Image (cartoon, rainbow, N blue to C red; front, top):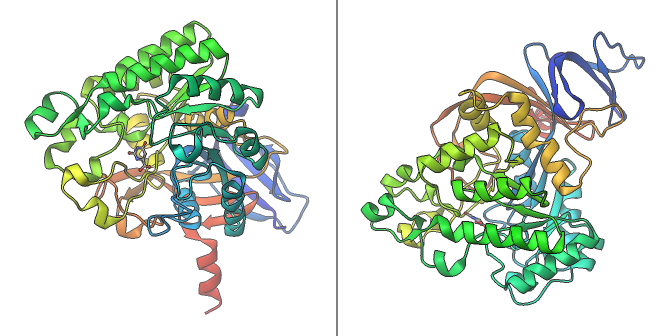
Length: 440
Ligand code: DOR
């Protein structure tokens, strides 16, 4: 296997408290050394000049919809992994709302096998809490754990039956797996299209109140306390939810939460044009909520940033607002959005942002990722934080184009990606494409 000496880059590795100009030596798929003035014993090591660039651990996106199996027109495991690599993510956890649902071992095995066939990147399947996501009976959680799921969720739907949620937390505790809560009281949210408030009124769209989320966040915190299980709140979007998580953490309850870039950057006011690419669940909230979430990043209540990459077919998004599905894609824009709008405006440092997109999600999911330590698997990303990324959906690796950011110019371009020591992207190009060009 080839060796690489990545030299003179700014290594940001929050897990090992590294934030300095250094070299990284990759041998046999692992990190062989990190330090200043490294030389390789292996004369064959290719030297990669990373001066002026940042070297970070391969990022971990803990909330991705890969749509495979079932909606391969929207995304496949391969296109999803390519989109992930383009965005600096070498690991993704995929949600079970596929067709069929990831609620039995055979579907977990299918996802794992297809990911292995792609040959780069890690896919960590999340198993359904309930059979078919129907919210009626628990899935075979033990069988799913044996097959390799890293967490449980009915994401896209809320488990409204509190007794089932209690049992899910009790069982998942046996394997120390988190239960990821899609916190949305379905009776309060029913028929809703956007955040309930001034904008839902003037746009004539039915609102989804903040309370629909907060009631379930409160319930799930109470159930985590009752059971001692681990609850993780997905796509937390309101100031009230954040306050509930803050208080729960102060009381020592095992709760974690993630936010998405869109809930940190966009607001309900962006819906003025009825553009369905801004239709997402939970909905874009008020500027006050956005401010609170940004504060939550600053003071450490928020554990992770995740894309909630939710591809949808073009013809389905090109519908009247009420009929379009909820969701937007994010794998290829999350890192640059966070660098530009969150780090760039001084909310948190780049190192903190990397921690929220690598170390912390890896820890929540219990996967050995997000670190550039000697002996670690060499999942690495080289990043040019000054280069400009113009968001052009036509150039996406994803099979879908439902982004609200088309045309935006962002800072932060991923130039190189290594997955288990193998180059996936070099100088901005997928290695497979470089090989096919040289063979022409
Ligand atoms: O907007 C969303 N889309 N929110 C979810 O929770 C599910 C997702 C999807 O699967 O499309």
